[in-house]
Image 1 (cartoon, rainbow, N blue to C red):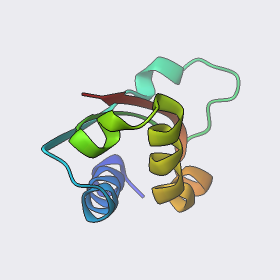
Image 2: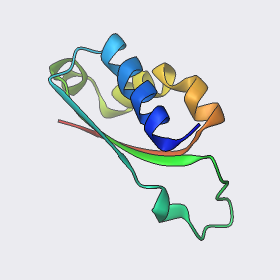
Image 3: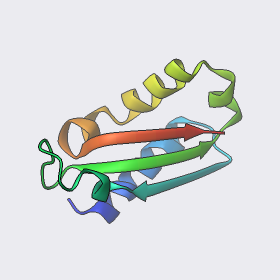
Length: 86
């Protein structure tokens, strides 16, 4: 899977499960380029969300919710996630 397909899937899954005002997803895979554990085809994504519902939750709970939504993609295609909630 290429990065554009992955971003589209991640965005769609989050939008379908969480009420959002805004979402932005960036490929930050270059941050892991020379790391020992870096695997081709695994990506580092930065997800920035604006959601009143998530903002009401504790940070760990909101992150768990996003991880649960993306569990299949994390197993197969995501090496690392950065999550920012506003």
